[in-house]
Structures are given as C-alpha cells and as structure tokens.
Length: 186
Image (cartoon, rainbow, N blue to C red; front, side, top):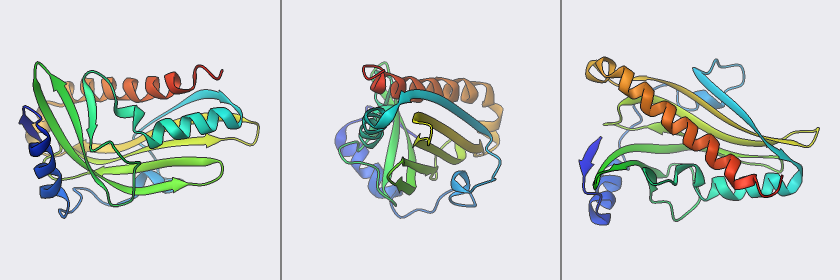
C-alpha cells in the first residue's frame, strides 16, 4: 500500500516495482476452481440476451467496475490480460492509496467473460477476486463477484472493521457499475 498524490510517474514506478513480485496468497486461481468455497460471492442479474452480454463484456473489459470519483485503476487503458500488474486506487482529499494486484486469469468464451486478480505485497489483504459475466442457457445474463481473502498481517487484522467497510464500498461500486453499464438495454 502506498500513499501519494497519485502522479502518473509515481504510479508507473509502483507498477514496475510490483511487476515481478510474487502474489501474497496461495493457491493462485482459487476463485476459478469449481467447488471451491468462496468467502464472499455476489450475483446480480444484468438482463437477458446477447446485447446485454456484449454490453457487460465491453464494460468489464474497460474496467468500468473500477471507475468512480473515489475508486480507479491504473493502468486502465487496456483490457485485463493475464499477468498484468495493476494498481487499485482509492482517492480522497487529493491523496491516493494504491494497492497492487495481478491478473491471474482471463476467461474469454462465447458465453462467459471475466478475470480474476490477486493481491501483491503491500496490499492490506491476501487473496483473490473474480469478476465474471455469464450468459445463461435460459438467456439471463449474470454478473458474479467472488472473493477469497484475509488480512495481510496483524496490523490490518486490527483494522479489520475499516477494511470490511471499504470492501463493502468496493463491492457496491463493482455491482452498481455493471448494472449501470447494462441498464439502457433492459
């Protein structure tokens, strides 16, 4: 975790620093394994049909889940790719907290699109999140957000109530962003 003014040069240096560091959790891909119990899982309906699926896919490829006045992602100029290192940015009062994550897998199928990313050193949690859109056989389109995580160390464990509050805000942001991205189709 880094606190800064969030200049592009500082963000780029932080991505470069984290790029070759190992993930802080095991097993990698835990959110992608069928039958693995997810610590948290949220599923929201986005609508139905191919247009809804394509709109949701476009939004997720463009990191729309991570775009608000207080939450951003760097770099967000290209779609998620495997082994891509990104910074999740929390912005307030001109300051920026950055948390490193690595995309561990991208799912790009005819009726499923998504990615999972996991935490890197300095992140207050150790774990992984999955962002997945599925176009069901009955034509419904769902967005699933799954997470498996725990505090990274004792200090973060002591601040767990604040961490849970921030996670709830992030979860709401992710779910609402996907619903907004498809609401004009419904």
